Amino acid sequence: MKNLLANIKIKVEEKVYLKDPEGSEKGRDIVKHGILLIDELGLEAFTFKKLAERINSTEATIYRYFESKHMLLSYLISWYWNWLEYRLVFAINNISSPEERLRIAIGILSGRNENDLEFEHIDEATLQRIVVAESAKAYLTKTVDANNKEGFFLSYKRLCKRIADIILEINPEYKYPASLVSTIAESAHYQKFFALHLPSLTNIHQNGSGDPEDFLTHLAFKAIEK
Image 1 (cartoon, one colour):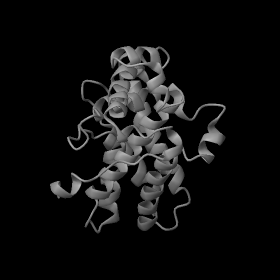
Image 2 (cartoon, one colour):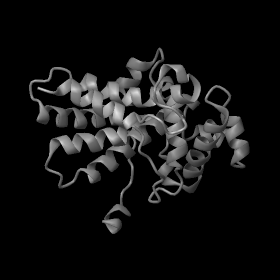
Image 3 (tube, helix red, strand yellow):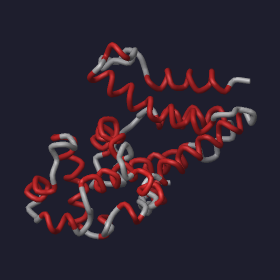
């Protein structure tokens, strides 16, 4: 299995970048340090000028790969959802029980996370913090409809569809599988964010008390029970 995974490449939709950063060392460097710098500064304070200084390059070089920092953020979020789908596919392989597959999917969505050595230039734990703090900014924009038509959100929608299909295996009569999956995915982010910054809004806390995976699993199975 390890040898098989060594050949895996996370493919992001082409419209999310101008030049594929996976195709060059410089592109991978932009992604690697872009993640670290956005995590350090936040998206608002992050600029391509600061990133260029960090990687000893020029802003013009970065603009050859990404039109804007919003496009870079969209690329990172798309990569993250594709990575979660990749993890899910291998995690549920040969598991016949849809209930168990759903539990695994919720565990992955809720952030049961670790760095993946197959992608050395991506710090997945840091990327997850960006997803928690910044992902809504990728689609809460005036250009969301145009971005959607260009495929910016295909990776997220594909992952949600895959999990929604599992829900329908468990209960074919359930009316809201897509709504439930997107609610679980977004709630996983919000619960982590609230635990860090607005703790009175959650029972999940930094000290380890409470568990978003337990909460979201309870929510899902209560919703779809026949």
